[in-house]
Amino acid sequence: MKSLSQYVQIQNQRKQKTLARFFIAFVLVALILLAASCVPATDAPLLSPKLGAALAQLDKGEEIVAEPTPIPLLIKTLTPEQIMAGVPADVAGLKGDPAKGPTLALAHGCKGCHSLDPNANPKPTGPTWFQLGDTAANMVPGQSPGLYIYTSITNPSAFVVPDYPDNIMPKTFGTDLSKQDLADLVAYILSQHQ
Ligand code: HEC
Image 1: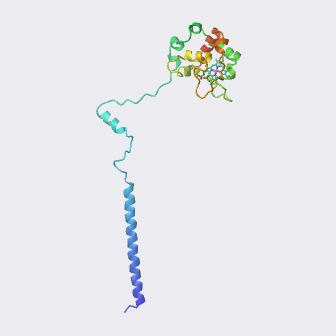
Image 2: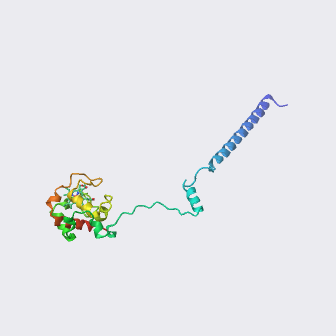
């Protein structure tokens, strides 16, 4: 005959076992749910949303054309006429001598604000003249590099270079410099290219 206390003890052990089973079952269900949530959704786009369209195009035997990246214009690909297009005849008609450029740039103070070294330190007040011939061919759409440089010198406010201040470069060079000096300076700056 079991005593009452033994009976209570057996009952308690049974309860604990049942609880333990419930707990294990709960953990198993939780693990299964967790595993299920890790399976990738089959309807979610895994790759570029454009891939389907591109593959369909290929399927039909069509060519896929990527949009071209605009290539900056280099002035070595232009003819002398294209380079000087639009420059007033009284300057364009003269033969500019690039060799005179450095002396003129020094004499007229350009050097104080412009450097050929793009990494000059301290940073000059004006934009670098490093490869400015090529840059000039891409600055103002439809403007030849020669006209861009001529205008930059004679009328600096006509186009203000981004990130640089307006009204700093003297506006008097158009009248102070002779036509030959202008032609030489334009030729010199145009000669800075790849
Ligand atoms: C007091 C400073 C200063 C002097 C002197 C100066 N410039 Fe400038 N220049 C600037 C600044 C600032 C800019 C940019 C703002 C603008 O577009 O007007 C500039 C722009 C230019 C540009 C356009 C550059 C580009 O990256 O598109 C040219 C070309 C130029 N200058 C030529 C000259 C020549 C040639 C002289 C001398 C005859 C001269 N500058 C003298 C300050 C100066």
